Image (cartoon, rainbow, N blue to C red):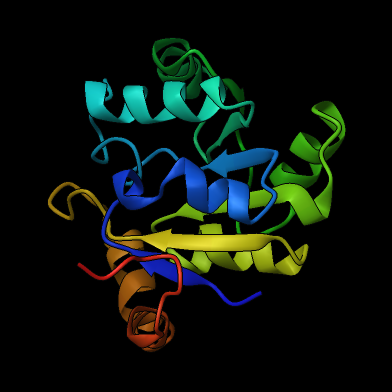
Length: 168
């Protein structure tokens, strides 16, 4: 399946997840559900996560960050998590796969970076959705460099017609 782009995580509906037979969402943290460096999540993202879980779809936070930084965010979102994923290596996604007994065809990766989130999911042939980063202000130099280097791929994903967005 091709990667599709959404302006925000909040634009991804439960109906879209159901249409894809999604049983689990592997969700990035930084700049997907909270600005990079922020210590908390906006309630609208917590509400999105709770809504998805209320419809029987599990949500697992997957971050390259360390346990001590991921655990508080997972607690706020009331989610399972895998820290120190080492994305784009499939290592973290494989850990989630076995820990939570996931199935490749019913797992969806959602993230804001092509090089880490999307590429890591593609290595395991997982479905992937890319979202616009919440904020680019506090990102480090390496993240900015990765975004610049992968901008061609990101632009192609953004230009792709997304069949899951309903035109109004």
